[in-house]
Image (cartoon, helix red, strand yellow):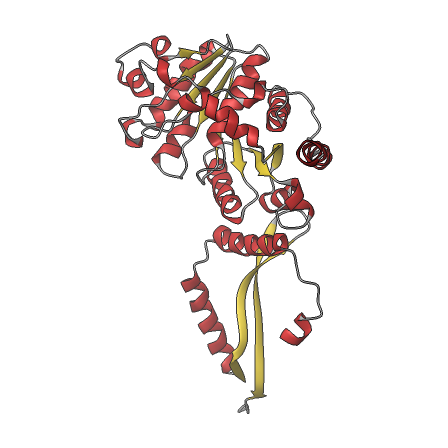
Length: 264
Length: 91
C-alpha cells in the first residue's frame, strides 16, 4: 500500500524542495519508510536542503542508465533511519530521462518504501512530465501571490489532464499580519480561486532559512512554527485529521514574546 | 467616475490581487487570447452597427469571471455598448 507523491508548483521559488524535505523527513520520523527523489535533473537541490550533498556517489541517471543498482544510489539519512534520498544528476539535463523510465523507477521504489516523495522541477515541460509520470498523488505548493497562484492553476489543470485527480494544496509563506490588514491573499481567497482541497498552510518563518543553512529539515525542530505546520501536514498525509494551524493567535503570542525580548 | 471614487473606500491590495487573478485565470482557462477577443469585439460591434449608431470609445466588451456559486467560475462575455442613435430602418 505504498504511495508516490509528487510535490509541484509550476512557479519556481515557492518552496517545493523545502516542502519535499520536510514532508519526507516528517513521515520518516513517524516511522514509515520513505524515499525522496530529486527529479530536478541539472539543478539538484534536495541534497543540500537535506544536508546530504557530501554523500552522493550515484544519481538518478546512473540508476536509469544501469550504471549502478537502485540500492547503491539511495543515500541513507543517518539522522532518520527510515529516510533515503535518490539525488538528481547535476551534469545532465531534463531530456536525459523519459516518463516511462520514471514510471519504472517509481514502481521499483514502491516495492521497498511506504512513501515516495518526488521533488518536481519548476515549469511545465519535460522535467514536469517526468516527475509526475510515476506519481499517484500530487501536492501543489503555492504562495499567496498572483503569479504563484496563476501558475498553480495551470499545474492543477495539467495534473488532472494527466490523470492525477484531486491534487492537494499547500499554501506556503503566509504572513498573518499582512493577511489581517488586507494586504495578502488569505487561504480562503486562494482556495476559492483554485477550487482545491487544502493539505496545509505554512507561515513565513525565519527558521526555514536557518534550517536550510544547516541542512536540517525544520520539521524536527520543536520550536519552529513552520516545523509545526509541516508536522501537521505530515499527519494529514498519513491520514490523520489535524485542524489547520491557527496562524493568527500564534502570531500574536510570538509577536508579543519577541517584543518582550527586544524592548522589554 | 473618479469623483465618486474619492468617496468609496479604498480597496485593500488583497482585493486588487484577487480581482486581477480572477480575470487572468478566466482568460487562461478559456484559452482566450487578446487577439481572439479583439476579433470578437470587432465583429460584435460591426453587427450591432447595422442596427444602431454606436459610440465605440464608450463601448466595452470583455471576458469576465462570474462565480456560479459552486466555487467554479464560468467565463462571461460582458458587453457594454453606448448607443448614439437608432439607425433609420428600411422596411
